[in-house]
Amino acid sequence: MSKLQSFFEGVRTFFDDVAMEMKKSSWPDRDELVSSTVVVIVSALIISAFVGVSDFVLHRLLRWLLG
Image 1: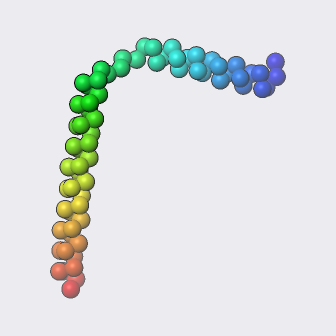
Image 2: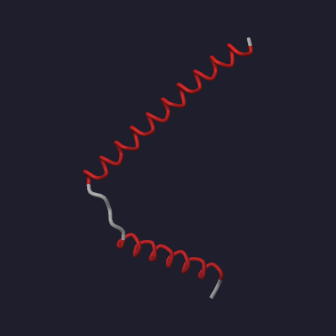
Image 3: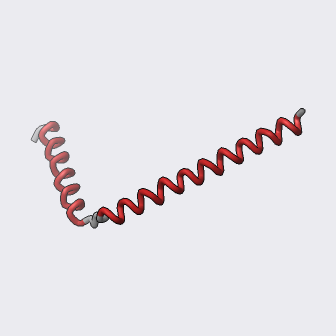
């Protein structure tokens, strides 16, 4: 068996295994997906607002302290 033939058999085996594992997975329904997406977006907005406010305050504080 050539190296190229062996390579393609390995790739085929990999994708067969991936397909088998994907069938075993449980997928969220639409409502669960939407609620999870909302949680991620809201969390990202809250964290970015916190980082932005912290950056602004620390910047002003350092400008005041350093003159």
